[in-house]
Length: 221
Ligand code: TYD
Image 1 (cartoon, protein in one colour):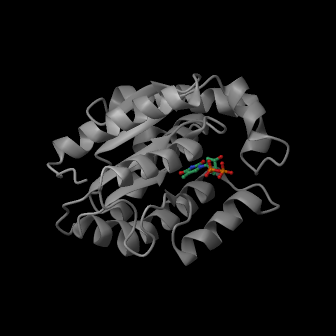
Image 2 (cartoon, helix red, strand yellow):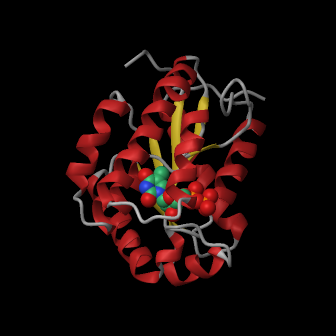
């Protein structure tokens, strides 16, 4: 792995947990603290998974909008492939340049959705992702904890392939994230996402600023 001076913060949770909204708010707030947030090509921006590179966005399309059901390991390897591309071309260079990156989903989504909810095993899914991760794990992972019933209702009337699978899957995903949080207590924080948006944002920001301070980055203006 290349030398890294930046900070990697990931937001996670089941579908409709509010992480995309919170990721955008977090970027705004960290940038307002004078931190070099987002990739240097798009300062202030959230990076999303699967996606974040041209190949990753193409893989996202197969994963989320393809017509055929995918075998669980096919799905897992496609997420891992999009991730390997992001690690190599975006995350390692940007972290090496000292940027603070906020990701909307990362490895823990694969652990919760494919490893736990699809029953492939958290260890097995981590193992196939490991070569592409190149040793990179988040400094901080925030899991927004929301009742899956509320999450699916928020996900709205144009569900992607995974949302369309319904509540049973989302319940297993929520249990999967709880298992991931127990497995990696040093970096994963569960935050109650079923509160006023500003209260959730304040909790997310406090956790992120702690991670930035732990990483020794100086806050500017
Ligand atoms: P998301 O970005 O939350 O979709 P949207 O932008 O429509 O809210 O995530 C896409 C879907 O992919 C979501 O259902 C979770 C799923 N997913 C996995 O199953 N495994 C993974 O490793 C990742 C990154 C996402």
